[in-house]
Length: 112
Length: 115
Image (cartoon, rainbow over all chains, first blue to last red):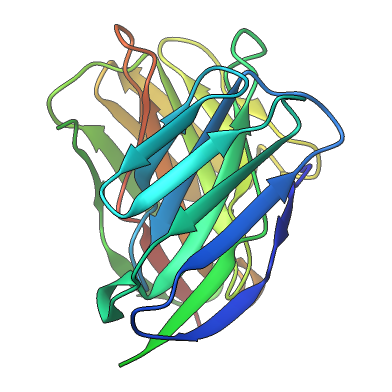
């Protein structure tokens, strides 16, 4: 199936650093979602964005829905070891079966 | 929060046998459930959309006779991998869409290993 372009593919950072990752698409979505997946687990929803330009925070996480509706970014501030995992963006076009299109994932590694 | 369970969490089977994976929405009803497959270090790929009371919709390239889906109730969908082969070894994840809120919740996944 179609995938979104998510970057970077992986990041290895020092604890306390800020992290930024983004997703871009050639087509528009009316919902952007960010998930975290721990090894051997299913994805867990972190942030949902429903409106172009929307900026939403969840603790140390901040995500924005791009104005063009074709991109989104996720920032993690002051990273901690438990932030380790794979982060996926997903775009959704409500009404078109409401199916999710996933990005390729960003593998985050945090060095204590 | 809404919970989706999967059973089993992992399974090992021999080539040629069939394996059934269950996906249940525990505290909400779902007319639609989705089945994904995830290979190591890759993203989730949608296999099929499971619709309660009707036939599943399969994505291009997914064999419906090999991956049988049954969505017999508003809280249960099953995926049966028939005549499994080693290349079917993967992490299978379901998600369920709350029929009231339309939010989609993911299960914890099932790791299938075919020997």
